[in-house]
Image 1: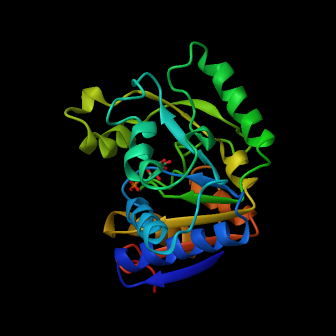
Image 2: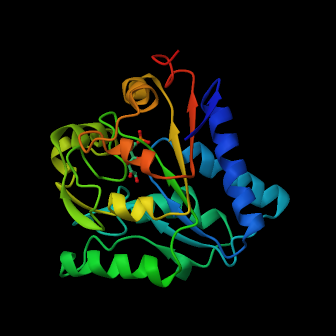
Length: 243
Ligand code: F6R
């Protein structure tokens, strides 16, 4: 696991965007695994700036997102599909047909999970998976206790995760209770992984990740020790409990 320390969020976003841009330049048909949430938004802003100023093209890039809420209409401002449209897809030259998220409104959500696993295989696997980290160490919506062998599955969101995400909704009651997420097995099958952590609220999780080196299902991010190509970019606030 390689750690890149940055003084602040802006620098973290620049460094993360540089790694993604390099991946695209090296492989213009790369499959990028993407995340939502607060952490990657600065990275997406940098990718858009680079696209506008330097012309980096996403014409043949495929993207596949980690997760989606169950039961939110696609056009709802809080669906991860609409988040991705707003924060990235609408501002770059990506073909909408090449952007994939789980369908949280599928009639049979179990079938949808199997379809998503097959989709990942059929597009050739993920070249670079971008991750945020939850305060409890979750990655994707894989909460503590999730077996590392899980592939795409439906999760009941914990109260804490719903509370953390309630900031985007009018009321915590509006936060969906279920989501579809790639499993840890899918994440670990990516060729390279880039985990971003910013802010003091991530300091405990980062201290646990960077100092304990113990792989345990009670701390999902520790599954990343089983992967050979993980880069962590964190700012000083997220590293405030690490020497
Ligand atoms: C988002 C995702 C989550 C977030 C995590 C951190 O697609 O899978 O695991 O990365 O909850 O969220 P933020 O970045 O909002 O702190």
